[in-house]
Length: 624
Ligand code: GCU
Image (cartoon, rainbow, N blue to C red; front, top):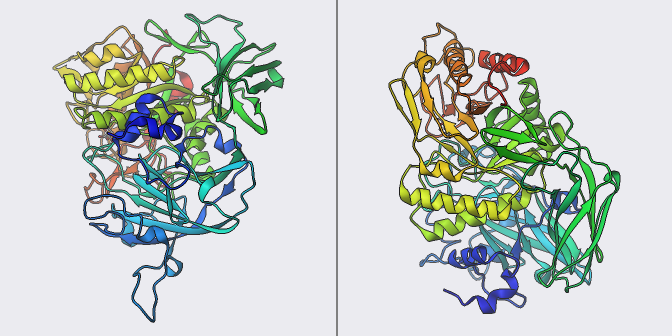
């Protein structure tokens, strides 16, 4: 264990348990001059940045990946990171050369770009040159929207950061290594699935690999705003007419007493406060007029933050979300969530969803479905998704990928989880559309898991006390026509998600008609239910894999759910068919999970029309 004292500079802004996590993960970097600093900058998509998206050279480093890993498994800083060139003539030196190597688009998974890489889950190196003109008194960060799964980043041969986790952004300080003119960045991404990974090895979705989201250079003043929380004050109960806005602005490396301004002209709210010794400037201010965010009126306000030379304007909505008994209250009003699950897969073109067009298409489907809610599963999606949800008035369930079995008995895995939870909440805490944080999906009901997840749920509450915490449980015990949830983890949740597949994985569709559910007196979301059907495959309602049978299963499901008083939302699995390596029935699945209401190429199945009608008429479920 490395003594934190001599590393405190780099880590002071990371909560102690995260700092410990980084150290545990051995992610500390070789020292070179200024300690490399790694963080997550909030609101990057509202800053002026230099995009590094585009064509990047790549080299495959097949297992055992000796360009990346030394024989004892350490990171090799002296190989491809040097971006050297072979002496084709003369003394033998290197046997790699990015400059003549093929290219991949960034952002983009490598699997759907190069046929030979379709099933490749190993190490791949990216390289590109870029120009920079560092200015005195400024700092520059390399922002990576996401890279699956483990990433190691070098700029001008110096390692600037390492990251584990395929679905969250990270920002690496490059100030000390940049020079005027041409620079280069080299990123090694290892997509291998790990037993102690999050998620672990067995997943029911395609492990799209590589740099899957935007990359950019972000230049800021020496002291700058790296994190902020601006929300409607969240008291013990919802106060109609409450217009108090509160939170904090964190200014990195600002001396105590530094002035910070929060200005929301349209709401008639302006606060000027000072930073404390930790760089935090808590504030509270009454808005003179405030329209609360809701699906009916997804009002966003221009929120301008300023401190010293740094300025940033974000688009933020204000709303109150809470639980009251078995009800979910939005701005004091009971709501019913009419939703669907969605993987981050691009409709029609396939691959990881990461463009404005991908997101626009997905949200057009949700609109057509008359949905007011989407569960982004099973990991944080591209920030475009939550930004669009904010604008379109679609409420969001956001989740970290504790999917089924992970190493719940390992403290180092818990440390990784805390990092991922922090990243998810830090990036999207100011998104009004995000109403639920989920810490897991379908995990085994045993004491080790329960202790692990209860701690994680409490960590989420510590990070954000303004949103209910949930998880999707498949631990309901179904026997004959009784279904009982006896899971101690449910006690730690504010809202309980239940996954069940009566009529598909177990029993007959009609079993749902007589199913008696015994559930806690909390809001219940049916977070997964459904059946598979290949688009265009037609037949009788008892013929599995047909659109008719899918509708038949869902009709019985909806009738069952309509009778459960605590059910406050229906979230069918899943909006769109998606790739999964475990789905290999030729001519029916062909590598796709076919429980979608829409096929992967955008064709609406009969089941889509079923939900479109049910959601239009609000004919299933009650808000209270
Ligand atoms: C599970 C799981 C999903 C999976 C689905 C299915 O409930 O949470 O990730 O894809 O079932 O089996 O189709």
